Amino acid sequence: MRVYLDHAATTPVFKEVAQEVFKVFTENYGNASSSHSHGEEARQLYEQARGIIANHLNVSPQEIFFTSGGTESDNIAIMGFLKANFPDGGHIITTQIEHPAVLQVAKYIQDRGYDVTYLKPTSEGYIRPDDFERAIRKNTVLASVMWVNNETGVIQPIEEISTIARNRGIVLHSDAVQAVGKIKIDASLVHLLSASGHKFYAPKGCGFLYVNKSVKLDPIIYGGGHEKGLRSGTENVPGAHGMAVALSIIERNYSDWCKKLQSFKQKIIDGISHLSEYHINGSRTIFSHINVSFKGIQGETLATALDLRGVSVSTASACSSHHGTSRSHVLDAMGLDDWIVNGAIRITLGYENTQEEIDYFVQVLCEEVKRFRNI
Amino acid sequence: MAYSEKFKELFMHPRHAQEIEYTHTAEVVYPDHGDRVRIFMRIENYLIKDVAFKASGCPRVIAASEAVCRLVNGKHIDSVKMLNEEHIRHEMEFFDKGFDCIRAPLEALKKIISRFES
Image 1 (spheres, one colour):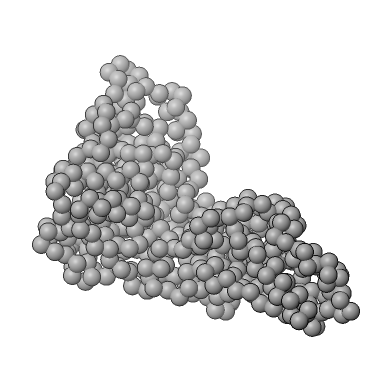
Image 2 (cartoon, rainbow over the protein chains, first blue to last red):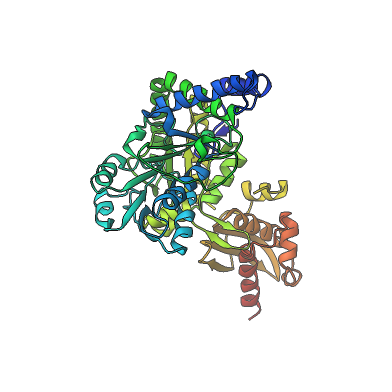
């Protein structure tokens, strides 16, 4: 049996989405910027998709900008905001547990004279709103705090951070790549929000950025002036349509799927609880994520053995060819013991997983943990 | 990482990860990698009559430990003195030279030989 439990890395495209996208590729292939009827058909689909996505996030369609994915959205949000409003410097707050798409941008702007504070999470992987408030300075202009952490699945206190940011006049960006399509998002809580289609059963290579109408951004790439000049490049109509169809399917089935994944997660945790000396990394986690370490077993070793028995999970720490050992910056930031950081595997459930798959996974996981402890 | 069928077999089905009555043992630890290997040997009249290992670490350390055990089991102690990293890589069918962790069980073997001879 082959079981896919790495949905935080990427998701399969829903069959209905694939069929719809195929139709756009072969029937509605016009350039959405062309004025003829082929172009107009494509434009209609594109704008319809914008409306569906905006509605899903409780914002207006004019505030949704299509991009190539999460990394591009994060780059436009941070760099585009600073370029348009504070080109001469300022203070930015982010966290130590962000995705590299934010952390590397933060490092880039830091090298160019901006001050950056990287908030440390608790040992449970949670950013304290009090720490956020304490980090604010007179010249703080922007904050970037992820909605859900990609490694631990910890849901961050965006609502509390949003209240503080608004009261202090700070623009708030959130990388919601792991949240959209999994938890209900009110994007109007933040000023800028990034999402990526392939994390919610739409194709790879498409994403979007929500930009609150009060926020001005400058482009970071230039060309034909698409997306109101913010993101030049021929409109990805199949991608935009695919994201809209995927979110509609999720909305339709959300209640049932949510219950299903919660019960699968509980089943896995119950299975793990029969083993000794383990640590579940992070609390207040999303229903799809379990990050767990088993004492005495490296995460890479367990993930490799599971893979050889047909189950795909991921690990953040591994020996890296020519580069010694790479470690999870998220678990390190949480201040966890070495055995926990080195032993972590990430199990991320998806809506298409079945009871049979979860039963098989729990059995194989328990067998492999016991086997490695006897080696 | 794509591993050879031989590597997978060594990693998933090690025959020498067991307890034995031994006369010699040595341990090697690579703390930076979190790798730890202990080799156990029963040496009688210069013959390696039995060999086993205990290891915790990455997949390559576990596969290399099993490979070393298979290469030395039943051999005369003199004939395993020349065993080197290339022999281990060949036995494992693993040729990525970036990983030095596979040296750990070989170092444990060398320690045993040196103690046996001293």
